[in-house]
Amino acid sequence: MTTTTTQISLPGQCGVQEGPVDLVIMYGLHHAFRRDLAAFARAVPATPVEDTATWRALEQRWTRFGAVLHHHHSGEDAGLWPLLLDRVTAAGDDAARRTLEAMEAEHERIDPLLEACAAGFARMAAGGTADHRAALAVRTAAARDELGRHLDHEESEALALVQRHLTQDDWHRMEREHFSDRQPLAQILFVVPWVCDEVPVHVRRRAFAEAGRAFAVVHALARRHYERQSRRAFAYA
Image (cartoon, rainbow, N blue to C red; front, side):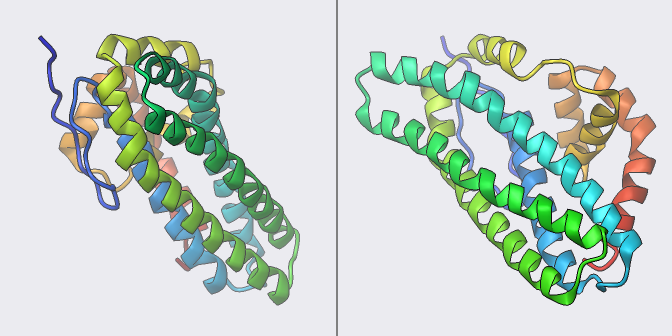
């Protein structure tokens, strides 16, 4: 008998896909991606050109954000999409196959936008102009919109395929093989409070239960430093 796991719902989330796989970490990451991209899009046009300290904080935040997103997309491309593709091909589901092909194509469209934003933040941190800021504002808004559409598509269609074709054991095995590679300590100290930012307490507790109690310890140790960095970066957001 297949067990259905009650899923979480966070602001901005494009629906909930019920099924056997607990998607609390996936939905938490998506919430954090949306939250940060919205904050970047607000901060860039509002941050004074001459406030170099804030631009440096924004550049550092973008670097951290970009590393998390790259790790997430790389894991999906190497692990999740191929696993699902095998299952939907065996089931003869051509529509599902097209959805998975679209996921990979969307990742390829997003990557150049992220690189352009990284270059723009580096330019502003080094002493950019009003024109450089205006160009970066266009890029961050485009990244917010493009990734937002991708996350909506993933949540409405691709995660439905996860629930239809995978079990919780499949999911945990895929996570171990493609998402659990060793990360630098500094990145771990960022990611844990970052995912938990603006998330209800009951969702945090559930995420800690899924990811491991060590993450609760990391959150307690790293949260205040993360919050100071966030205030510094998004001072004008």
